Length: 84
Length: 84
Image (cartoon, chains in turn blue, purple):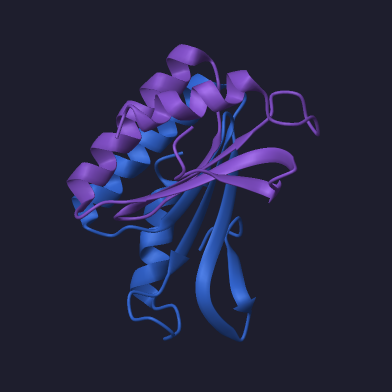
């Protein structure tokens, strides 16, 4: 698991993972965002994403509301790291 | 000005505009998001946007941090309405 992801709300009770990515310019930001969207569409998995000109925040919740993050969720987060 | 935008923090002191859009499916959500991104890129104007599978939230701040929303900002918001 890449340490860039933050486990929330608490390390011993993880219900979602968060990561913030910052890019040097809009073009790289938009390129990552488009590839992330394509990947999520392909996986049929839709994290909450917020972005501006040069940042992307990703919030990955468990697929079963309120249940803890699973190995599968961690694997999905690691796949997203592979898009950077 | 389309009433769907909410003036924040207060109607008599507007520093940003917010709008939430919901779509019936992912495809329409993604289509709008891509057109919104293209339009923002074309205008060189980058609101804070958050989205999930079937929603898009747009937060439009004044271009000059802390100053009130201008007529130009309202016009930009109205142009975004035209993309829906």
